[in-house]
Length: 306
Image 1 (cartoon, helix red, strand yellow):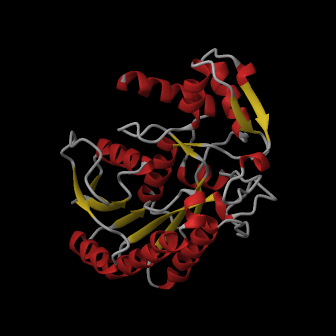
Image 2: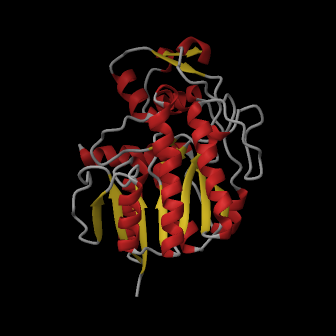
């Protein structure tokens, strides 16, 4: 009998990639949950979709107990950093209280909980970071994700868990609802418009397909503990924009360098994060694509859509 995975946030970018990956592999039974209607076309016939409000604790516990999964991949969260800064109660409900519900659900069903986290738990003064680095968030989003991580870590005595941290995920959702930096830069430059892009924030951008594979490898290897899953290229958004312009032979002179201070963003961003991913590479066999390879994959995907 196949083991069962319950996936939260299946309508999001990572969720969609995980649905595609897990169903294509055929090694696990999949139940996908998200709020509202399923945004993926039911072309696989290989998974079940359940609409679920993850802030409703009773509904979460009832649904998870009914599904009785072997693994819970908890990817649902409020990830808009500025929105989290303003709507703090909603952020806490989605990122912390909901995680608490899934910890309890994992205990009730003896499931292995795989919890998604972020580089924004760090202050960005010492990146790139390994799994042992000490958290010090500078935004409320980061605060909420640290609180969720600590809740999972404290549950070690009662559940089996993994924490998967990632950085600046980019990719294409099925309904093209989420704009990523590659398509944004390409579309703007093709229109002959100028771009103002920061060069003082350093990240290791992560292709959504790579993050999905990292989560899948954690499950497949029954890996526990904390894993950094990201790309390896240490880049600024400006570097990403230049790489995109070079790939598509677009006019780089339209790209202007600006500092983060000029953006007047509501929440602070850590200046220098990024991840060291040696643990995932050595323990899981994780092999991320380069940023250039990621651009090529996105190009192929857009051509299929168009």
